[in-house]
Length: 475
Image (cartoon, rainbow, N blue to C red; front, top):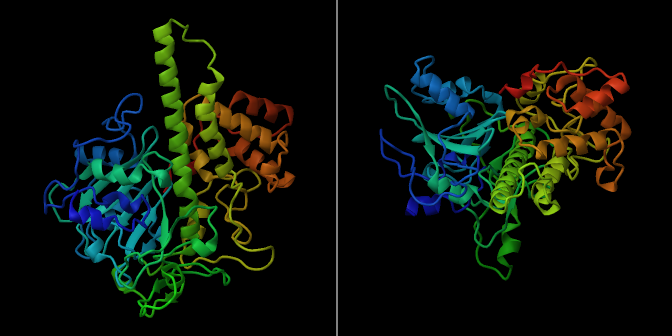
């Protein structure tokens, strides 16, 4: 492993996401920049076949269009291919968040003065470094999960997205990604240069994380009604004292000067975009985990049954079902925000973004007859008004293999209709359950027959079969 790779990944604050440039490469100007087909990559064998070229993620589809001459990436001197990449992948500019910790192979160019810009939609994460040499991308394939790409930022006749595998998967198939190719957000105690303070803790950030542990090494703009967090601050070097290292780094100091906003597409690192990003990254990982565990369990069982002469249609043993029902249950609970950290106590405050992100994100949601959408925000006590993840509309969710997908839908119907009144879901009121159920019945195509039977018997409006929601293919 090169010194550049080792140093570039030391803090890994980044999202395993924008970490698409992570260090899995040795940069060579105007040439091949992504390391491929070398060394061991987990899940390369059947049934996952992670190294397969049979991909349908957004970047793979865009590259096909580029190869066929149906579209082109446009270069501009100030931002290279970035604007064109965002436009063609339908990634909104107002999703921009900024991280100043040194976390990619381009770590030398990342600092509080020049943070790394991250952009995302429902399926793609894009990372860009000021005066960097490559755009870093993580694109979610419905079957394979996170696929990592680089785009050389030098102007060339035929710019090409290069898939990167080896080194990135060494860091992005880990506990923080739930053991599958995925994405993650880290919060650290950053120094004035963007490195992680010695002997300090780091935290993985998702929707359940306490705010006091979030956003170390990130800029955060907008209003959070006085809630304390680790963003916009650094650990200042101090003379040695009797204090422990941890006590010293806990004293974060606000940055004395802002970054140069003129070099970025926007001057924002919107707090609402941060909240959505924290939800979405681990939701993606849980979908991939459930997908992988189901395929692995069924493959192993089929192999065993074939070897012992057991008929293929024999019911699955309980121990086999547990292998995918456990992650499916995790996915279900995360999807319903069961352990979500509260934003504020009732009536004590609200979150306000600094850009148009919240407005445009909400506008992309498909709505029922009452005008409700799973993309509607609350931003007072929690992130969303109707706590059920909008990623239920994604192709990755729709592609979950049976019987895991059927298990999730069955459990979801039990909860939303009040059949499951366990304490685990006590935060969901009867009114909220009813609203989520009605929204899904009216907007989600492909619901199982038991959902349709329930809708008919209770005279509820149901989505026309086969009609896709706008939010499943939007940016």
